[in-house]
Length: 547
Image: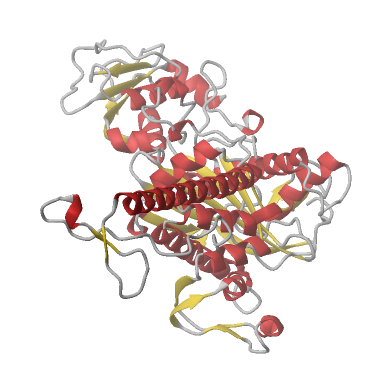
């Protein structure tokens, strides 16, 4: 990830992650789209009846005995119409029979318990192996921990959990390793919020290697990394290291575009998506307008109408058609449908308690098989589930880079190939990154909401305004901007007036400014009323801003 990171002050401070472009990687997408077969770049430019014998007669019943005297006890030994008075020998016979019945009952119960434990143990072992096959570990997000040490956070943005969801066609489909669905699920575990951000599959980017060309659509990044590791094109390969290389390649490119780190990946193909929807009994979606696509009629019993408007429940195949279609709409509209279905699936999973039900988990794992890969560990997934299950859809934001008024990408043509590019210019992701930072604010910065004052301690005009504007895009609460009483500060100073209360904000600013906070303001004339942290920019900031 460090190879892709862009630091603002490389000379004197630690490299920050968070909202800076990175390149580490790992598995991705819940929803898959119609594959783009173009992967060569143009020129650059149940029974227990057998457990044991049953007694021939029902166990003898003990009649009521008000005075508890043996003489009054009558026993029915099964002779019709005959009540026999108690006799010592006959009483002993009954006691032996009753004892035998009790032994049989106990043994039967013991056998049943053993069977239950045995079957349960088998199911647990089977489920455990299936879970480990899917959740094989490798990713890492510090913010999944409780009571995170600020020193573990490398930069703004590490207070979130960023998961890259990648959807592929899988075996039997053209371009089966093209990630025709790319979506970032960014979770704020501090404030219990989630953002879903769709990444246009046709975005033209620089590839991590030259296996499919130096430049290509972003949906080819995963296969480029995977195939380079294998040294050949082999969509059928499930080599773990090759998949990891694919994740690393995709993560690096996505980090360059969005300016955020990728902590985990989930890779899902068509079959797993269909089966996941069917396993939870379908998903309920509110379709805004009719979805008409004659190119997919052959998959829809000959009907070109894939979905009628209104609230309805989709089974697996119908949900897949709904999220794949793009011939009669646009890729941007399709990403909106994908986010809607993903939210519906999340709702159904949480409502049914799927992830806390062993049988449903077993069904999901059987359905997934080799069709899902992720670098979540079981412990990470368990922690994430405990976080997400309490997040309602009112706290889930759906974002797109082409959704007005925040449309930062547009379609274009390059050497006759239809592509998506930033409005700011080819490979210029500055507007995209500023927007993403503003939407995916670090959870700790938001939680503390520390009041920051920025002062210009140099002779260069506008320095404080520029710094304040950038800090705001990261979510800092800048409340004052102005000039210091003197303009000869050589080094930037950070003053913490909270006695360490806003420890996360202080830590991030220390990293950003390359300094250590002090507790006293060097100039007593500075008005610090209503402020928690004060930044006095020095001449070193001018040098670093020019680097």
